[in-house]
Structure formats: structure tokens, C-alpha cells
Amino acid sequence: MTTAPARALWSVAPQPVGSPESAALLRAYLTDVADRWYRLHHGRTTTPEEIERHLAEDPSDDLAPPHGVLLAGRYGGERAPGGCVGLRRLDGRTAELKRMYVRADRRGLGGAAVLLAAAEATARSWGVRRIVLNTRRDLVEARALYARHGFTDVPAYADGPLPYAEVWLGKEL
Image 1 (cartoon, helix red, strand yellow):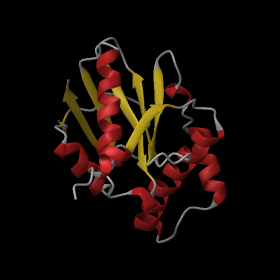
Image 2 (tube, one colour):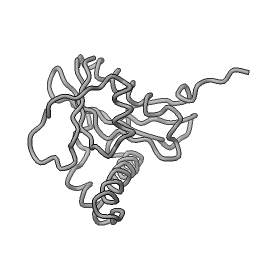
Image 3 (tube, helix red, strand yellow):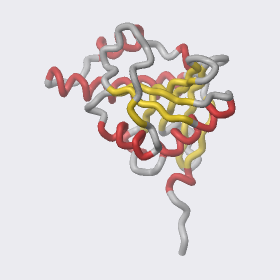
């Protein structure tokens, strides 16, 4: 008997940034990456107050049309999204990948690769020729995913206070 690969069970579609589902996904994303940061640097997880502060300091409004999109991935026809990825235009040639996340209970099922491919297809449909992103050194799984999909080191593409940006990657489409 032949079975379809797990990644064939994923569907991806735009999701309004302000929807309750998006808010839950973006909160889960932030909690996941913030907990890893706080464990590494402070020996503890984040508090609810810290999560609220981070959400307020770095909202995802830039992932709304016309210059951005939040894509939600659903596994096996589930109603609740199992992951997300954001994309925003930086200029006519470049888009930035943001908020790549797959729920812990859906990891290992090919969702990250499907979400990344959907983000790249969206960028191409915008006429974008390059995707860039920033991440942290401790997010080794994310960095490995990006490397497997052709992302390489690039110079920093943004100025300003980006306390968690330690690695800058890009890919020509």
C-alpha cells in the first residue's frame, strides 16, 4: 500500500492577521521563541506579562495586505491552523520572511517546508526576486530548514534595534 507523504496533507491559505486564529498562532510562535531565549539567557520561561509586552512592542500589522500576508497551514483538513509564516514587501525586489512557526504537535510532518514553499510562491506572484530573513543562532532547526531550502548568509538588511537578529539569510528566487 502506498501512502501520500505527510507534506501532501498540508493546505496553506492567507489568514487575516487580526483574526482570533492568527492571534493564537502568533502568540504561540512568540511564546515558543521567547521561552527558548529566556531559558538560554535567564534560566526560565517567559511570563505572561513579558509575552504581552513583546506582542505590543513588535506587532504583526505589517503582515496585512497590501504589503504583507500571513499564511496559515492546516494539516489533514483540520480546522485549527498547525502553523504559519508571514511575508512582507521591503521594496519592489525584496520580501522579508517573518513569523515562521509550526505547532509542536505538528512538527515532523513536513509543514515547515510547505509553508516556506507557499511563502516563496507568494513572493514570486508579487514579482519579488529575493527573500530575506533574520533569526537567532540558537534556533538551529530553523537555520537548518532555511539552509536546506537554499538560503545563505547575507549582510544585515535593516537598521535599528533588532535585539534578537543574529543571523541574516537570503535567497534569490
